[in-house]
Picture 1: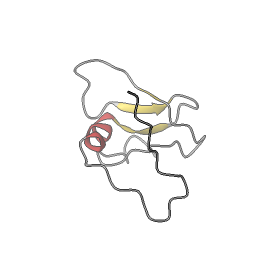
Picture 2: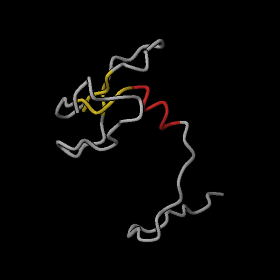
Picture 3: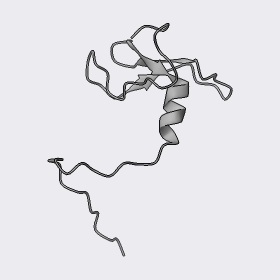
Picture 4: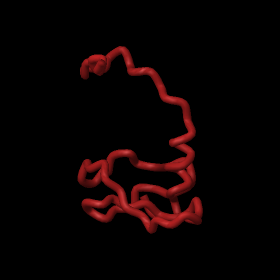
Length: 78
């Protein structure tokens, strides 16, 4: 993924180079949507902050029927 081919709809949640979730970007209150987001581990471009913002505003999707991880059901703490 190069900066020129990345648009506001592309963001890698997991780095395709090193499989980490951690990201880094120049963080300030007025960060523009075209601010690049990099992998914190290997430095690879993962997408743009605009794509992260767009992803954050999308509704959650239900778990797929084929998911192997158990549904998390925390006990009530009273």
